[in-house]
Amino acid sequence: MTRFTLRRRALLGAGIAALPLAPALAAYPERSLRWIVAYAAGGGTDVLARLVGASLSPRLGQPIVIENRPGAATNIGAEAVAKSPPDGYTLFSADNGTLVFNTALFKRLPYDPVRDFRPVGLMARFPLFLVVGEKAPADTVEALVARAKAAPGSIDCATAGIGSPHHLALERLSREAGVRFNHVPYRGAAPALNDLIAGTVPMMVLDYPSGAEYLRSGRVKALAVLSAQPIADLPAVPTAGAALGLRGFEAYAWQGVVVPKATPDALVAQLTRELDATMRDEAVRARLQQLGLEPLTGGPAEFEALLDRERATWLPLIRDLNITLD
Image 1: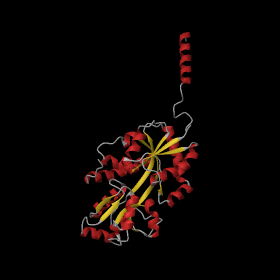
Image 2: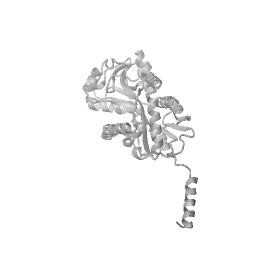
Image 3: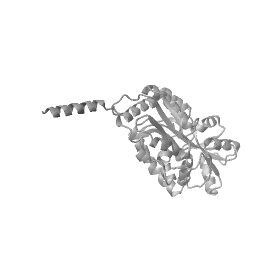
Image 4: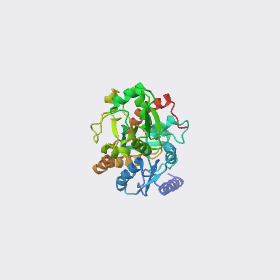
């Protein structure tokens, strides 16, 4: 071996040693993480992120700072995450709107759900109910559907907004039950619920976290839950599928955690492991259930399987009905 070769190898070795460690090999995390929420502070998504983040933070050994970026049907928050460095320090509360519905609701998006995001794990789903107020057009979901069939489009039904899981659940229910309601979109569940209680609208699709207090007290009446099974908190409320003979019918709002696509495998594996431990924590699960949420567990594989099922169900419906937010 020549003196030149030895000198060259020594220089190369010194150069390699001087390089910073790759993110997957460095101690992680070394600083605080930010968790972007594409909804306003105080809403169900924000509460979920703060509750899970408070338990996840000590597991990671670093603070988690919630950053609210609401607007444009989650597109503002989603774009910010898509453009963030893939270094494991940006988390995102992604829901079925961001990852499924928006691809059909908008002609162009500032992000691509497949190209820009990498699933970490699931968190929770929000049960949806078909509910009526005191001026109810019917006392059972069967009677309601019968009335709607007799007079198509004559019964107003409020939702949290065009393109929301609530709206799309109503559209799917209407299609499979062979009825047509007059959709009345609001800017969120809270104002719609206020009008339901006031008698301005006779019925609505309501997510449980937004209306748990009213459903438990009987101030509004649940005719059916749109889940596959009755929920433990209100076991007497039938599922729409069973009551109406709609095989396989179910609709939820759900959320999971994603990171920028190029985030290294080792960092994603660590986040997945700690998120899963958080979602299995009995105290976290009990608190979520108190809020009307159904805790979910499952890593990237389960997340991807859910996305495949959701896209097969909802994208054709949105396109067939020509629902758009452009």
